[in-house]
Image 1 (cartoon, one colour):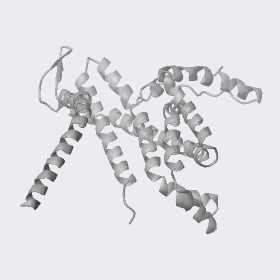
Image 2 (spheres, helix red, strand yellow; image 1 turned 90 degrees about the horizontal axis):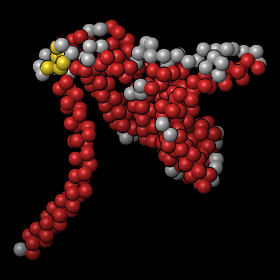
Image 3 (spheres, one colour; image 1 turned 30 degrees about the vertical axis):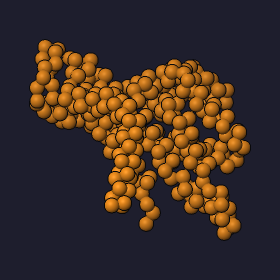
Image 4 (cartoon, one colour; image 1 turned 90 degrees about the vertical axis):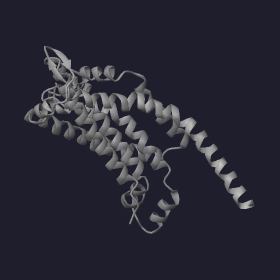
Length: 292
């Protein structure tokens, strides 16, 4: 009898805890339903609409999917967007790692805090404004070509190229990737580093065998954020890359301008979201995979 009473008391406590936790989760759940799940479902439904006389009409037909998936230019833009985002991810990760390593191991904790603060400051200004500032720097008569001209080089065409697009991607993602890499690297157990050095490992192999595996989750999350931001960015490929050939975000704009084809643009948006979800879930699964 006493045991049953204790079980009921524990059950009541558990239900109270669950209800309390659920209460605090409700705002997040409501936010996700209102601003993510709802628009996502509406976008998916829109892909089956038809445009007649420049007006959307409800329907359930696959014409928009067949139209977009059957066009070669769509797949060209799709693989171009994935390629540029993947390249930006590799470049940003490689550029960020030395900076993150220096902030984690070579400077004081106070200096690291200030460095992270200064890395956050660029996000206080509009990304569009920061992108336009590169016009002055990368133009044929801009700062970079003038400096190169002093040593007899150039001028080089850097705007309206993939190089310009990549510069814009770095402007958007590099500070964030440095921050996301610094935090896990700074939390690496120093005793593991000292043990590797005592066993004769030089700096390079200590990084490869100890630091990177220990900070793997943070490094992968930083790379995923870089890929997501680059994959969905419209500003850099449009204003710095010249928009030709178009990436998928540019194709969405062009499609909506072409006969108000919002349903076909929705097809592109859904494919982009599915791609990002696959990449994100696969990367996170790999990041948290247990070592065999």
